[in-house]
Image (tube, rainbow, N blue to C red; front, side, top):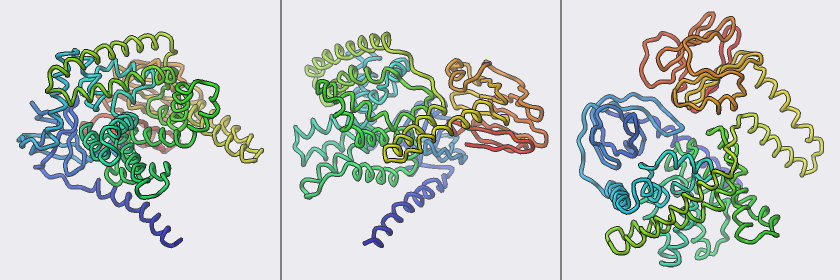
Length: 514
């Protein structure tokens, strides 16, 4: 039995590694068959043989979901955080016939424009984004408001949406047909990682009773993770995957305990608060790592807005089903308009009474993790672990004082420079929130731009278009931020595919953390 278990564990460890290698070691030819999966300012993202590539060049009149035969030049540039294997410069393309998946994309667009006639552009974008993940027209201000209230997950199809839709379908079609009908919804929403994760877990839960097995939430979550990593090897690097799984893990482990502690509160309030708090326990460090800020209004935002958003999920999907039935479509659109109006009023009220988002940095993450480790071992009877947090004093000294010159790059468009207690932050883009990163980096000074910066006696930085040249005593480097090619003969430090990068400058060498 132990040998069989060992073989299974080894297989689970090595198969994703092999699958990951296979995913990125793929040859893209000068002529390829692709599908457009997203459109953006620089071009588009497409799928070729289930791999993602960036498209630039001639993309006139290309639409989301279309299949194309493209001709051009491919450059391999792996971005593991997004699962992208490179960039394809399109010289010419030919559109192929619309298949089933393409028709689904067209249907979502058709529903959006039908709703636009009844609700207006902005409300139609909110409804389609919340209901079935069609967020191409979503207003950035609405997205920012939801982020400030800690409910950004609610304006795209998440696990919570899947639970709601599945429970409704189960009541209508029964436990046998609900999983089959639900898979249609998963496909229609674009099969987001959190949605697929939730669907797999509910599928296992539904199969537990007929198969006479006990449903284990942790085993179900683990299996969902294995399936997704096998299906999309890059998914483990995506922030959506990490947040979805860590939030669910927090709910599984802590929800019941927190719920019991709040027994004096009414049931609806107790359950809402316990789910909000338990889901944040493991996701808090990830939110700080990626976004450098934390919403102080997340509790009120989830308690007040989430019930309204759940109503929009139901109404939006009814509108999608009844889009051809004018009388019912008009009636439900009328109701949806006032629900979204009430969401607007509630959002504005909450933004006025809740504090602004808190800007945080890696010190907070380290403190948070050390606190949990200390509490765990102290609870287990290891009294001396109470001195463990003292390591934070040394860490804080190294981080803030920086005995060696240090350069930090943030993908938002920020360079932070620190050396012997002097800390400065420089904006590389016009739209950057300098005050935010001044707090995040604990900097005394901030600058909108630069041409040359002297870091120490042996190092200085020079701006070269969108990239940066780091000049040392014996060697020069290029901090690559842009996607363009360069003609420098220097060593390249590639930051263009990273959210964060750090360089520590030693006497005659440098250390790069990417």
